[in-house]
Every structure is written in C-alpha cells, then in structure tokens.
Length: 313
Length: 274
Image 1 (tube, each protein chain N blue to C red):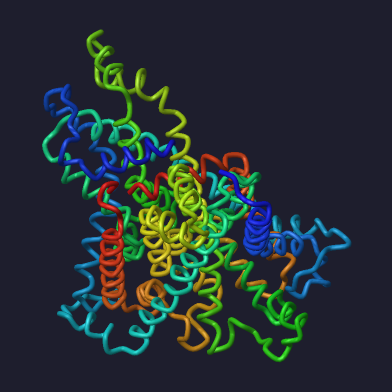
Image 2: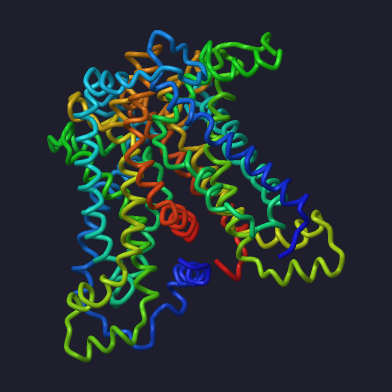
C-alpha cells in the first residue's frame, strides 16, 4: 500500500459518519445484513458476549464450581487493597517504561541519526532484521531469554568478558532484577517496531522540506526538531499505542519465564487474571482485574490517540 | 538528498549496532540448537560440531509432530474462516447500505482494543458448558472472532478504495451483489487478502493464552503451548529447548523472509491505520 492510500484509508475509516457514502450508493437493502451477519455472529458469540459476562462475573464471588454469590464492588476494592493485585498494576507501570518509553526514545534517536540519509543502500535489509523479533512467537522469545539470563548465559558471559563478573547473577531468579529483566525483553522486542515505523514516517516527508532547511543552514539537530519530529507525530502515537498496550497485555513472557516469581515480584495484571481464574479459584476477582485492565488499556489508547495530528485522523 | 560520507558511515554503524542487538539472541538460539546437549550450559557458543540430532530428539521426545499438526490445523481453519467472513462483511460495510452500519462497525472495531483477558474467563466456562473445551473448535472459533475485528476493518478499507465506476458498470450489466463481489472486486483484491492472511496466520500460530486455557489433552496442544510445557520439563536441557524453539518459530520466520515486504507493510499500514 502506498502512503497516499494509507492516509486515505485512515481518513475514510475515521470519517465513516461524515462523508463516507459515495453519491452513487445503492438503496438500503436488507440483504446487506446477510453479508455482515456471519462475521458479527462469530464475533458476538465468542468475544462480545464473553466480554459482557466478564463484567458480570466481576460483581460475584465465585470459585468456578459452586454457586456464585453477589459481591458488590468488593472485587474492585481488592484491587486497591490487596498488595498482590496492587503490585501487579505497579509492575505493569514499570514494564511500560521498558516496553514503550525506552524503545520510542531510542527509536527516535536512531531515526535522528539516519533521517538525513533515508536513501541508504540496504535499508530494506536492516528493516527486515530489525523487525524480525516481532514475528517470533512470544513463547519462543521467552525460552530464548531464559537461557540468556541463566547462570552461564549470554548476559553473564558478557559481564565476565568486560570485567564486571561481580555483577553476574541468575537474573530472573533475583527479586531485584527479575522484573527489569522481563522489561528488557520488551525493549528488545519493540525497538525494531519503533524504528521501522519512524523510518517509514521519515520517508513520507517531502524532500524539499529538508532541502529548504539545509539552504537556510539548518544542522542535523535543528532539522530533527524542526521537521522530522513534528512530521512523526502520527507514527509516535501509533508506536506508543502498540507498545504501551503490549506492556499492559504481557502474559506469555511472565508465564514462561517466572510465573510471577520470585515471590510476587513479577506478577502483572494479565497473569493475575489468568492465575486467579484458573489456578486459585477466584473467578470473580480475576474478572475484576480483567475489567480494570481493559479499561486502563482503553483510556490510554484514547489519550494517546489525541496525539494524532487532526488532519490525518 | 546528498549527505556527507561521514554521516553515511555513522548511519550504517548505528543501524548495524541495533541490527546486531536484534539478531544476536536469535543467532544464539540457532547455535544452541546444534550444540551437543552435554556441552550446552545455556551460554552463547559458536558450535564446532553440529548435533542435528537435537532436532530429532525434540521432534520425537517433545511430540512436536503432533503440536505442529495441531497448529497447522488451527491456523489454516482460522485463516480460511477469517477470509470468508471478513470479505463478506467488509463488502457490506464498504459498498452496501443498511441501518446500523456505524454502530455494528464500531462494535467490531472495539474488538481491536480488547485484551484477551477481557473475554477468556467466561469464554472458558461457556465453552465448557457446551462441551467444547479441549477441542480444536475451542481454539478455532475464538481465534477467528479475535481476527475478525482486524479482518473486517482491513477488507472494508480495501473495498472502499475500489473504483466505483467498475462496480457500477457491472451492476448495469445486471450482476447481483454477490457476483459483483466475487467476480469484480475480489480478484484484484487478492494482494490485500493475502496480506491479511499472513498477519492472521502469524497471530494465530503464535497465540498462547487461548490454547493454554482451553486445551488439556497433550496431543491437541499447539506448538507454542507444547513448547511452554516442554520448557517446564526440560529447564536446563538448552540444546533440546533451542531446537524445539526453532521448530515452533520456523514456519512463520520462513514465511516472513519470503513475504517480508508484505508483512512489514501490512503491520505498519494495517495496524497503524486503525
């Protein structure tokens, strides 16, 4: 898809209510429902209805087997009071720094360096390699990093190699480092995504803008803050949406690497929701965690959406 | 645009550093998968002898033949169902007129934002009530539902870009809606459908939570689920684990290298346009 098409697609999608109907649109027909119904039925049955049920479950105390009893808001109160649940949300906040903030900042830095040279040869090969972590199953990613963080793994090898052998440890088994170690995997995963997004955004900037700036004697920094950064607002918003939500949704990595441990030092909301529903028989509490997690994701998505430049969105 | 040679060198160096950072762990796992198990302490070692037997061992001891078969079955079913349902619904949203278009479309679109945790808990109890847990259907149907939010959105956008005059001409010739869709709109939309298919295939293949919740029978486990359990049983046999990891990741990675342009453009264009 070319950029022009993408922008059109985006503006049309957003403007569905405004002017979407082409003038030669056929008359309303009931047959249209036959086309929508199969997709909508599958969607509603296996996603829509269960989502509403999650809300319902969250107001009950239920172990998944015996009768459920009404619980009012107590499951929600527990999220605020139970240190384990509260901790899970705090951990998700830490992960956001590693999944979103660091990759976006590093991605921008990298883009600043290479934006003056977007005609670099071999750029598509770099793009392919940088993006590769995104396509590998997260369970595989988790097993790879389990060995990197192990006693004799790559990280400790590197530390030994540069004379920092005193820092070596089993990174995922250490209370102080386990969460950061998981976060760093997110950094590894998301840098490529950010770079690819930003570099493709730079490719959309009119070359004349750079030429003009250079005629006026702008340096690399001025060029970046004057032209590149403002032009990348849309891409930054997209990168933040994807990375922040992936931080909040983290489950596979935690499940495979630490199962929330050591202690409860790496529990996250998605893991708590799973664990309480299917292992410890606290279905109502799990549902409340799921509802809060969903609301947080929606609020953050909406907030980041405001970063999007209005003329495109 | 002309830049100085020094800037060019700096750009290449920086890009290379990041590329190495991205790929080093992946090369490490490839190396690890061919190291003899006795010589593998989990670290990064360039192999001098190649123990390809690790793959055979993972394949047989780890039941990966069964896991990969489950994954292929589920992925192919989800992709076919998603194509069929998304093309039909996308066509209606883009080209037909009916009351409630915006509301129905908005509901579907909301599905793009929902984390799996938002619906997986009741879904498990619902499917258990219908005697469907631990079947392939309990993976195929929910994962199709998850793909549809993206699929319908994607196809609708594609079909909106389709030139109206061509459709009008076909209609004047007396073609029905269904005929217009399959004979006029779908054939030139094959590239867009293909992009959607590879993305949905990747998401389905890599999905972990749904199989973890739904599947209890060993032979019905999908590849990522099988790997997670295998990991739990062989935590320090890094050779075997690496070989198993490569087996699980390989199908999508091969697909990625063959279709990388389609993958990246699809993800960058498709996801970012939501």
